Amino acid sequence: MENSEKKAEIKIGGRLKARMISGLLVLGPLVITLFILKLIFAALTAFVLPLIRPWLTALPESVIVVIATIAALLLIYLVGMFTTHLIGRRLIKMGEGVMMKLPIVKSVYSASKQVMDTFSASTKAAFTATVLVSFPHPGARALGFVTGTILDPEGRMLYRIFVATTPNPTSGFLILLPENDVTFTDISVEDGIKMIVSGGMLAPKSYAVKSGPLAAAEQAAAAKPE
Image (cartoon, rainbow, N blue to C red; front, side, top):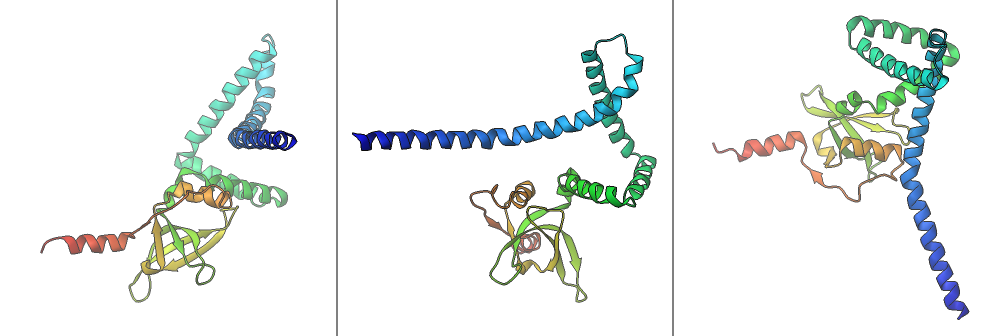
């Protein structure tokens, strides 16, 4: 009787633990995202509030905060629109140049910009495929991203492969390899980046090997009737 009760308690405890972990895995990313967004908007509203509060003294504080939030969103939009123009890009580069010369600010700004650039759409678009390469020694397999091709002195086509470090994908190694030494996979670039950032914890259960662009083009040419 006692053994059955202990088994029942262990079973209930195991279920409770599993469900708690599942709940944390679901809510954890959401809480972190909301926390980061809260910090960003708090910083922006803290910047905007002192500017608009003297003009809105007759309004309640809650209304002023709402107006400050709307002004912060408008500021983000205007900055984004400003960066799409040539003059705006030049001014931003000048500002970044000044930031990169300040001793302490340089390290913080550089690291923050690298992280943001890693997850930007333009960076993902620069990666055309997720591949596996033999690195750092024969027999090992490292996840890499194709960034383009280059011709060697003999005119052979080589793939430019970026092998990112984990969990920080802003650094890594650039490897030049012929297609025979590159294993193309069906893993999307987004899933590949998730694998790098999570240290392999967020990864597909399986992957398939597919032909590289050069081999696929050769196969298509060979299949055409003469």
